[in-house]
Length: 192
Image 1 (tube, rainbow, N blue to C red):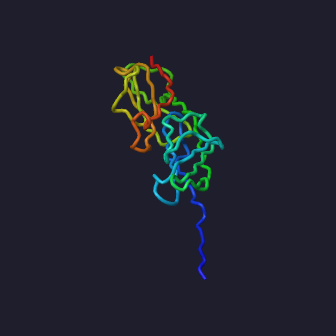
Image 2: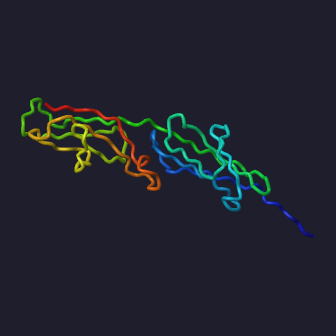
Image 3: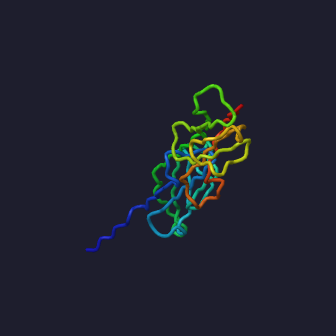
């Protein structure tokens, strides 16, 4: 006696890149949908955000600059191009986009009166977040040699308006540079 058994429907598996707990506004996010049978080109893909279908039919779905409005649960499924059969829908993947944090500049030097020629230490803070490279600007021009969280300056030749900004340090290299960097809001500190 010969018994034939048909395999169940293929399962869609959804992944998100970068896989990070901190995704900030303006960064790039790519979802990938993989069906556990056949080739990528054997399937036509349907994407859903919060159970609303989108128009994309590709196995990758990229949001080049995410916004808070992109928050939600994403799913995908496939329809076999030849057999017209649907895969099982993927499990939900949640996207949580956070507004950019604010960078603040503070003077570490504690004395109230500052004199020409005195060395002053400035510190750039991005509260509660890690993974930043710091950049310093004086009068809106970048100090290329200053990339640490603190900067020591001499008031004799470097008095002026100081800004700091943070750039995300760990992001995939296959995105254009505008998506590699996250610019943080700037706070001015004027030294007299």
